[in-house]
Image (cartoon, rainbow, N blue to C red):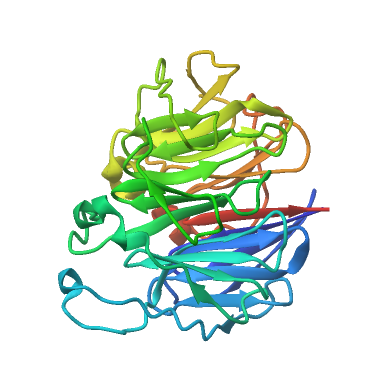
Amino acid sequence: MATVYVALRDRLLRAEGDEEWTTTTALEGHDLECLAASPDTPERVFVGTFESGLHRSTDGGDSFDSLETGFVPERESGYGGAENLESDAVTAVTISPHDPDVVYAGTEPSRVYRSTDGGDSWTHLEGLTDLPSAGSWFFPPRPHTHHVRWLEVDPFNPDRLYVGIEAGAFVLSTDGGESWQERPEGSRRDNHSMATHPDQEGLVYSAAGDGFAVSTDGGESWDHPQEGLEHRYCWNVVPDPGDPESVLVSSASGARSAHTASSAESYVYRSSGGEPWERLERTGLPTGEDVVRAEFAAGTEPGVVYAANNRGLFRTGDFGDSWDRLEVAWPESLEAQAPRGLAVLEE
């Protein structure tokens, strides 16, 4: 039995089942950006939106409440000169694997906030935009600003936090966001997603607009294994739950072919044990022309990964050799959308 959440541009889709699936939707009409759920508190789901802040469900997605977060960044002259305006754009959210009451959220413009009570109250972790490179951060579609695209808590150290800024920097904290280190050697500048693994300390993967990267020392330095990776605008990355050295990445040649259905052409690649990348084709997961980049979420068993693109929801049990389409309701209107987040809770 699994519960799968998909954040789409204009709704949250929840699919529940195994062989047969039931589908419900929530947050219709909102501009969804990200989501997070934890198996330790399956009734609690967080969804970030671009125009209406952070929403939380405490009943497994049956209903959502808009949280009074108090996300109030200090606006700089580059953001129009206004000060103390609430940030409605929540672009990243994650739940600590060490304590499900510890939640991190990121916003546009780039700020990071932490809750230690499951989202009831929040603290601004200051200093992020005081970093030396912050003046050069920008998001090309809105070049006057930038945002936190990804947040990842290290599975071995609850105070070690990885932050991807779109676009401008990989940022690392070793004290839960009390202080920040930016742009360590070899790190990517346009980090879209990151992944760690509970079986290998120090391992961090990054899928970035400027390529793939891997760290084996907790983000302190990075390597760029690119052989075989023909499309290097990387979007989402996931390791095999049973093998930290096997990894899938979704990628395209650029932003338009990744995110825009009318011009889409995206692919999925796999690498194992440091071997060159292989492109997965004709495996049951749609790729290529008219297919947007996939979002991934790992299952609990070795080889199990879920994927969402504009063609639907898919599952592999052999880490990409073959995929099955989940028989969930997928209206035709969703074929024009690029999913913005995927979370899976398996029983």
